[in-house]
Image 1 (cartoon, rainbow, N blue to C red):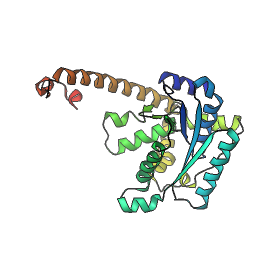
Image 2 (cartoon, helix red, strand yellow; image 1 turned 90 degrees about the vertical axis):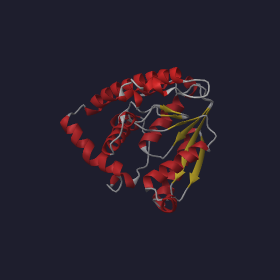
Image 3 (cartoon, rainbow, N blue to C red; image 1 turned 180 degrees about the vertical axis):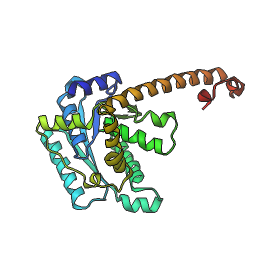
Image 4 (cartoon, rainbow, N blue to C red; image 1 turned 180 degrees about the horizontal axis):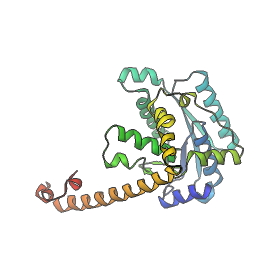
Length: 259
């Protein structure tokens, strides 16, 4: 699995220009696996410093406090810096009218950007990507939404995006790593959990190699997206004048390219 992660990092030049790397560290299996692999390969990747970033969302009481202390202890044992942030997400969501999930995500990424790291590695994996695409599909998404979670977006990188949850669990077991479990992942109160517990198992019943089939489909869709974006950018440059855009350039374009 380590070789797969390093290949993903290399293929997408994830560590380019990165001296201080932040890792979103929840204490769960995914983030512990990611932190362990990156720490073991720190010199090979050219990283000077690694920082574990833990977000306390103010949601799960004593369990969230446990996760914070576990993550702190893991960083101490692993020899990496640790930083934590706290937010009362339920209160903030009530004020803004956002869902708990959306509010937590917004706050989480806001804290990441305050961490002072060159890049932030998050532990999104192949299963997360499947959940994301199904969620986007249910809302009537466009091509971009069907392309799933990007490997690189601004300062954010996802080195585990080619790895399945099963591979991550095997790595955890083989390396004798401890982790914590978020109890909210076990119930169907959140949309992602409904997809994870009810829809994805059915897809694997239809095709036991669904994760591989999904990866092939995603690769094809991303190629189409890259092609359209490249052509669209060329057309924009053709339409660019000194102080305006000549939109007649777009008149005879296919609607897929116009959008």
